[in-house]
Image 1 (cartoon, rainbow, N blue to C red):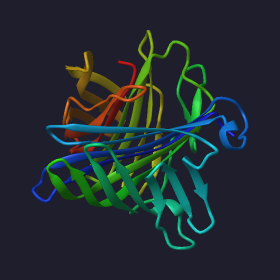
Image 2: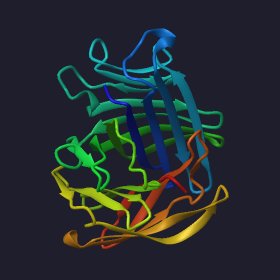
Image 3: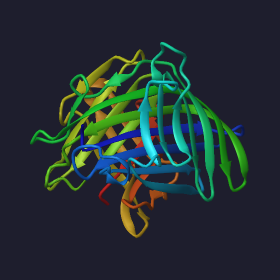
Amino acid sequence: EYRIEWWYLTANLDGPDGTPYGLQWTLFRTAMAPGEGAGWESPQLWMGHAAVTTPEAHFVAERLARGGVGQAGVTVGGETPFRAWIDDWQMLSTAPEGADALSALTLTAQGAEFGYEVQLQAEGPIVLQGDRGYSVKSEGGQASHYYSQPFYRLTGQLDLPGGPVEVTGQAWLDREWSSQPLAEDQTGWDWFSLSFDTGEKLMGFVLRDAGDGFTSGTWIAADGTPSPLAPGALTAAPLAWAKVAGREVPVDWRLTLPERGLDVTLAALNPDAWMATSIPYWEGPVRVSGSHAGRGYLEMTGY
């Protein structure tokens, strides 16, 4: 019933020797017109992105599909509590009967140079972003419905050119849907999902425009209790830029949130984490230091 929606999972991982990795799995749906339609008459377009980031490399794959012909989709209920897929990539619920369908997942993707199969187990509750799940994105009122599951414990295997790597770590799922594009003067966004060693978490974003931009987010307690941030409470300033894909992209940031005593620096694990996909953007893991230590993910569009 909405024009756009996505399932977006990112993960900070460690190999047996302590090498850090990042993982991304995303499924987007966009409707060219209202309604569903059968077969090739369906107006639904699907796009999948998968990536693995290492300190030295960034592997990317993309899949495109048309709705209505069985190539991609999402099912809820029936024999499987939840399944999202595009071609042979899938996010599949493995939760027991009666449990939240997103509490346990298997995630798979395959590209020309990489692949992965990982298992996720939620160790905390789903978190509603914004005002009980209604996340405002501009002064003009553009908004989306938005919730997260930021408490996944992950285990599994990456398949890389050098061979398979067993990994463990933590993952974060964002689920968002809307029929509103960005405001006309908004040129892109910088989005942060941070997990601190204290167990607390932070989701924050800056939607850039000709002025100071629109900034908002959510502080998440270790037990999953969300505290929405007022617009402008979080500040995000680039500290260092890198030449990536012929563009100047900020890869180190300073984030401050005075009401929580937060003053941290984010450093990209790999500054070259460029998603050279149909709609290009930067997406990769970051390390967090300063008043709070931890790890997280950074996404930047419009550069």
